[in-house]
Image 1: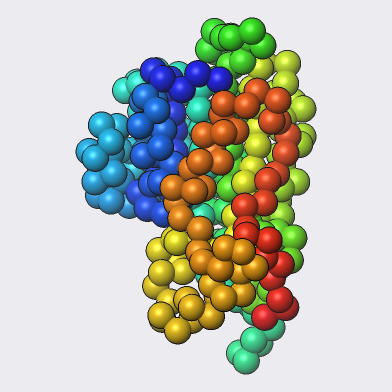
Image 2: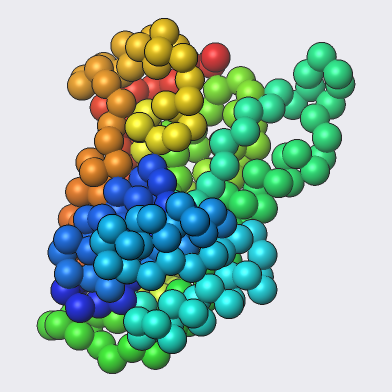
Length: 254
């Protein structure tokens, strides 16, 4: 679909994959709303790209509804939505202190999976109000962020892998439901990328992780994630699919 002049929403847009995506969309001429719980950081990105920053806790229905409404008021009905907001706190199911507190598991699910669904439902409802465009009558596209952990999650990733596996499972039924409205739904399953979470690790750990990647043996960059986002937007046949973006890595048990 066309990007220039189209309103776009990026959650988790203040850093990492979301910031890279926001920059790529703005460069292509989109009107970008940068949604993040860290509104100060979101404002820095928005100011850089000429977009708008909006505070949003994706795990809250009220916060998400207010954020989507604010984006709509500022830039019109969104035709593009990219969900990058998420958390990755590691937890063993049963650790030294006993079973994982249920609320710790629920928090990851609430942000990563329910938060993604929360934005998806609201963005799709707005997209259905847009006029169809192009030869296929497309109204919009929603791209969610899964993870390779959805397929080969490691010890300590039970909550994270569950949440990302849910995003994988959400992709096809959402794409099928929205097909009659001309809205595509896709997901990207990144491997090891230069995100604040990974870059906070020690240099030795980073080098060890990078060495585990078959080729290229380095972390992916937010700009490379954004390249796939832009291709998905441009290619009208891509729909209902989850694409691994991972340098051919398959995660070991630990």
